[in-house]
Length: 93
Image (cartoon, rainbow, N blue to C red; front, side):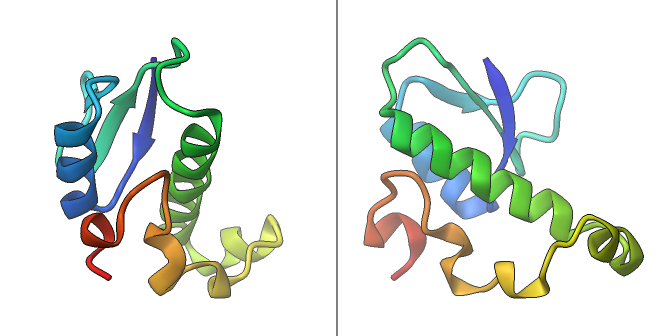
């Protein structure tokens, strides 16, 4: 199990659609999902969830820290919720 940050509305939809995704243990369940890595979820979906989680976490860092790791603010935006097998309905598109 890995805890991954997610946009709140998408987090709820993903939990409803996938039994392998639940509210993360000991974290704010509004923003964090627990994702089982037992092979039930497609690898590409898990990879997308990890990438989106990273973008959300890094976007919340101070600008100096984001620059120090070479992260571009262009990484956020409407495609941030491209995730993970999420449908157009899941992402609000």
